[in-house]
Length: 251
Image (cartoon, rainbow, N blue to C red):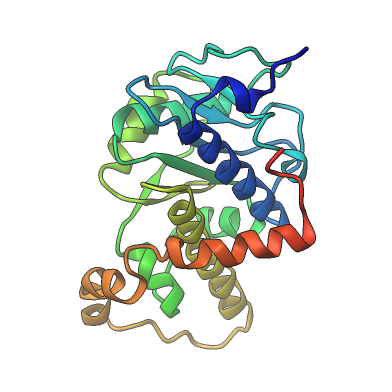
C-alpha cells in the first residue's frame, strides 16, 4: 500500500502544504498565473532550511498539497516526487529564503500589469491608497536575464534588503512575508496598485500624486489599518471562495 504524503509529514508541514496549494489556486482564480511559470514557495516548519515549491509542468489551478515538491537550499529534492522544479524559480526563491529568516513565504508573478509598471522608468507611483502600502516597503531589482545565474542571488538579496515588496525590472512582482496569507495580501495590494496606475495613465488626464508627507507617514498607518498585512483576516474568506470555485487543493 502506498503511503500518502500526508502520512509522511508533520501536521505543521501538512498545514503549510494546504495553505500553499490554496495560494496557488487563489492566484489562478484572480488570473495572475502565467501557465506553468512563476512560483510561490513556503518554508517548511522546523530547523531544516527546506521549502516547498510548485512541480514544474503543473498549472496553478491543478496544484494540491501532495503535489508540492520539497527541496533544500541547493535545489535538491529531499522527499520523493515525480516532478522536477524550475531552475529559475529556485534561484530567486532560494536566495530570499536563505537571506531572510522572516520570509517564510515568497510569491513571484509575471502579471501584465506588474510587468508593465516594472518596465516604466518611474516604477510604482503614489496614485492610489492601494499603492501606499507597497510604497512603504518597496525595492527594485534590475533585469539580468532569465534568473539562472547563481551570482544574481547576492545582488537580488542586497536590493531586497528588509523590504516586503519588490519590483523586478522588466520582469514582474515579488512579495515576501511571515505567512502565506500575508504574502498573498501583499501581492493583492501591489498588483491592484499596478492595475490602477496603468488605467490612470491610459486616461490621458493629468495625474494627481498623493502628497509626499502622506507617503512618509504611511508605514505606521499601514500597520494600524491592516494589522500588518491583514492576511489573517482575509485568508478565511479566500479559502471559502476557493472551496466554492476550485476545490481539491487539500488533497
